[in-house]
Image (cartoon, rainbow, N blue to C red; front, side, top):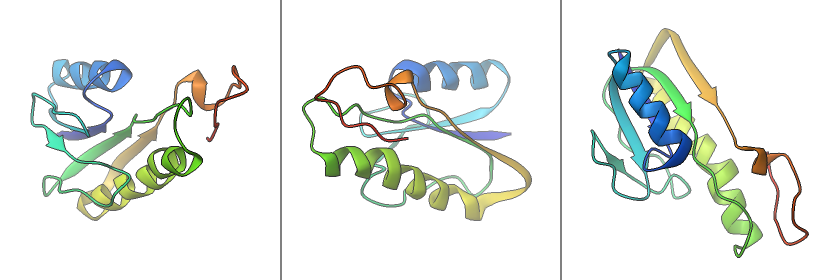
Length: 119
């Protein structure tokens, strides 16, 4: 079984990769930063990325907060990046494949008047 996980270089995404690996999946981590295991270095906000020719599951766990960033940057990563991730993997998924999209609480809770929120 093959799993593609975005946001895999740190945090929740990195933990998800480790869990899938423990469960016996071939994992492919996608991140703008270098990923050490089957890493796919890509900026999800810029377009589609290359994936293995069979994907059983996609976990979209990338995201950024709006602190110190423009509205366009946050939307490109948190919205367009999700679209690009799905478009990258969907052609290689078969019936029964799964797509899971997750976000931290930053995606739904306003905690600072300077934050740009999207979900």
